[in-house]
Image (cartoon, rainbow, N blue to C red; front, side, top):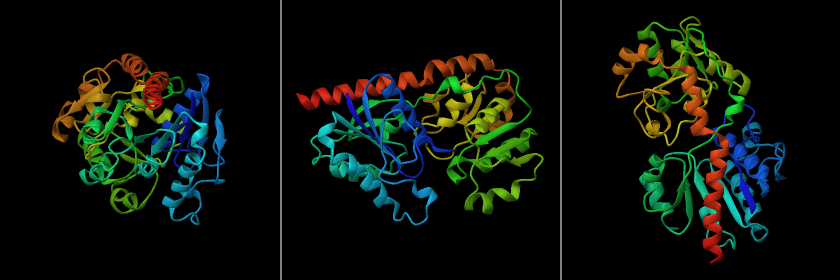
Length: 341
């Protein structure tokens, strides 16, 4: 197939550090190209890919304060693909913020499929339902439920490059929180759990206003340690050295990429039962899913008894990038065949 893959243009593909949307976009692009598909990636000019790269901007707006408003940069990147729609069999838009690709759904001669990377509100879905024919791929059953009423053509769980996540059988003596510093991610709850359990906690994420105002006062450099934003190699080492990844999520996340990444290193996860957690975590095998913080604190020692090698094996089986690529190819074929019909 001739595939146009449209990435966010906030930073490079793949991202230099964190960026789950950018990471997923890169893995899928490279996987499709490796299968022999004719893939064109619309991304920043400094991105790295084996596909054809179209970069109308030399770099992303995360790195250049003059690139404002960011929405216009995203829209023009999308438009660059649609303007050449006749050259593709399908256009795939990775909606980091919202599916602005819907505006082109009835204009493009080539079908456009959207992957959304957050949990939408009812108001958002109501707006998007103005285009009931536009195909969406959900990243979990949880997200598909929230997108009810739209044209969900498939559900594809995220994949990761499991070969690059190093298994570690014997961890160090700390817990890990890795993710953005927001109220919804549960960083304050992670700090409370670690303190009550009497264990060291490492926090790994980019410093921002929420960290400086809300989280930093709890960091003492001994029991609560701030690592900073980790690049890929540092992230893998942090995962592997942790006795467990804490995921006391407060918002209903549609996936939870850090869960799959930690498990690929053999590290079990302790997660609250929110959003798509039960779709990612095999309770009692790759981690434990808890009803509330009290249960998580009381039963955390049980988590450390899980077989880390089995955690790794299960993660590889469920979240390998090849599985994700296969499932997206199947979705593309269904859309293309229906369009031609």
